[in-house]
Image (cartoon, rainbow, N blue to C red; front, side, top):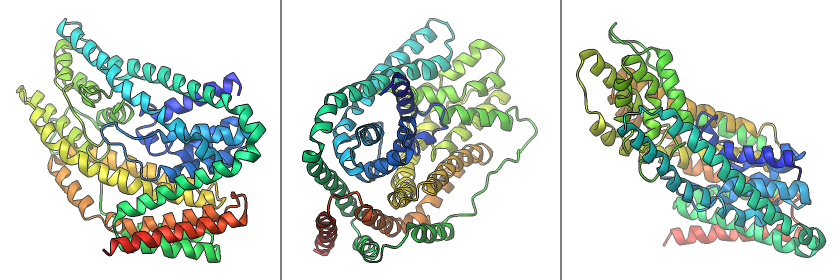
Length: 481
């Protein structure tokens, strides 16, 4: 690997691990193995092999959910190492996934130590504020934590590729002897993930949906195009098409323009997890997003600094579903400045953030992300690479719309919009039918992996197909007890 390739991959891993410069959608797109595998392969000269390898890794991490900054493995780092092994060492996608899987635990170190180290920036900000220095929140929530993340990302990527280089000669010299072992280990990880997902769904009809679609593809080898088209139509019919963005002012005394609101939203989306720390979680990010608002509301620098600091307290919510909170707080602060009365918004934020946090994760991470990423994985495993980006683009657009509409509607319609959003999500037809749609797509993806020609022998095809079918049947029998 050349120095340039390593540099580009370190930038890629940093970009995927950070919310900066990706409007917050990097976590739902670039960080996912099917995308990061493609981009790693693009850097190394074979993007579609990298994407195929990333798709296999993605099945292993399909039920990945990060809440409060905690997770059990770094799927992006796993995909990067797997794609590099596939392209540079000539390892098969399934074998590369099993070889790279242990490297995912290295990524945990970033979150484990980053959240502790970020507390240093929080404490430094507090100290500078207490000393009357009017610290610029942009440095403490933006620049410093991002520089730290890049250094940590480069070290982790460097360590991963250094370890991989140690096994380089062993893999190259003995690959034919260990190929079957790596393949079976990879298929075990895939099978275990699928069984675990089906078990967690705890719905016998979801198991049945998986089994029907899995066997249909195994027997008839139906193209993923048809399943994608059917899923697109179903999701369009089920989607809520009544949501709109309110942007009409209730009076003429407003000082905040739509441009100000958009810039504040832009800051939040890019830096919501930039200085994520055990002390404040998203506290500094909330204050950072209010910076331009207070500069518009107050002329005195000390007053601006005081107002920003008042929002640097502990805060944590789902960054997209919870944006009505931000919009509403901006409107409250604006009216307070117009009336020359200070309003304590801390209790408002604390009362709203918990509701949005639990609801948001259960929708954006548990429903939307696996649904659209599984569609992408399904088509990728069928060799339909370009069209595999369509579900990812739709997912990115959906996340942006959820976030932006919440921000604007929260400002113009008040806290009631958060309750309206909660009711909309609770009654979502997509969420209601998610289990059946997702399990069917997962069945197609599993079958496409069996039929993709990656396996070393037809005997293994049959064994894996029977194993997955038997596992699904066993889970169904257990669910009836």
